[in-house]
Length: 264
Image 1 (tube, rainbow, N blue to C red):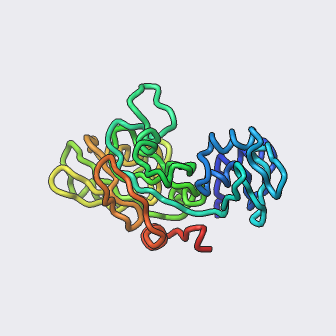
Image 2: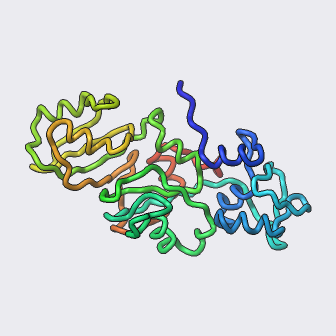
Image 3: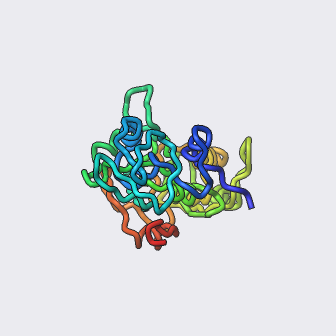
């Protein structure tokens, strides 16, 4: 079985201070638990406002054990890991990145504007990517393990897309999509492909290569005019455009196949 790639936060922590694979480090624990956002957590640590087991700790990536007592600004905080997942209905134009050189806007800017006050202390990660001109379901989470679960092809978590296309959607083209399409750099896994009306194709994939849906459709002579992701796992997007909501533990586990960390 292919080994999962280490998340970037863990790679950075090891490079900067050394953290065990199954351990945690201070700033990450604070932001994952919703105590302080990442930048504020690092600033608080460096400013000497954080103690661990009664001692001031100014090392951002200081290893942290489950039994450690953490105090921020004189108050004990709970840094036990939790899993929070937000479903966002992404509009066109926003880029799934922390920066946008074109100045149109990022999904993180929208997240910060929409997230309720009780969730602003978390360090949010985007789960996968959508192109700037693609609309639909995008998850945010504070749990890097959920990111790996939802994006690793080995998990086989299905993602359903609706593409509006130019060209005739024939049975032969659908059969080719179902069997797997040979692209320049790889051959796609078999996909579910259905017709929805005269100009729409519904594709359900368990992998997510760069521009994969558009490239698959282009390979069978269908140019993508619009693309929308309407479902992941068995969760179908149920929030309005440019809005978000938090999923319940039951939804995360039952619809997305991931057991939240705080449930053990």
